[in-house]
Length: 215
Image (cartoon, rainbow, N blue to C red; front, side, top):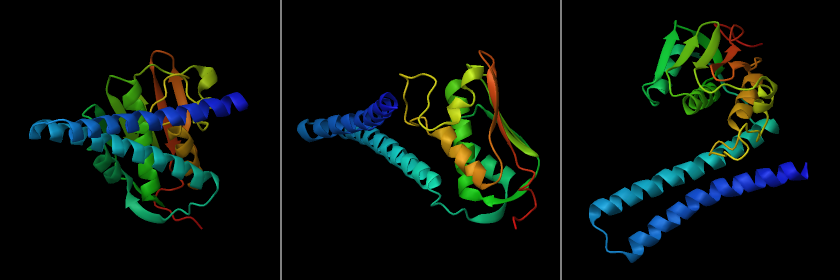
């Protein structure tokens, strides 16, 4: 347990230290060098990018804490999930293909968007090929990436767990843990099917949310 805590603290420290060091470096260069306007704008854009990364890290840590402590009350409303997914996908790369029929669900729209964003981001991160998002009675995100070992399929949904122990990125291994907590609030759960070297399928059932309101 102590070893795990040390690893988590080290990972968090690294993920915060890296963007802070980059930001400080660019600020010092701007303050101490006679740069042309084009270079200054370029450096300011990099500073902005890294401040957004820090903000995302903090948001993820805050969200998982609220979810675990049951201090987040979902705001259920009716909305078109297919339209929400379409709008969300437009902010990603062109490698995503959406296959969906019109689907209205009763759920917390903001939280479901977080679920979709995490699943799609993961798929794009680990696959260079097209990522397919299907919406029907289930929501499915399918990739042709590196795949996951069978023994690690359930472990990757745990907080701070990462398959590549030394390959920490700005998710801190929180993405799927957040997804699992959010789906639990909606009385469903994340399922994973994967083959090493062939890709993965992440999906969850939404039949209880379609055109229905919880009691």
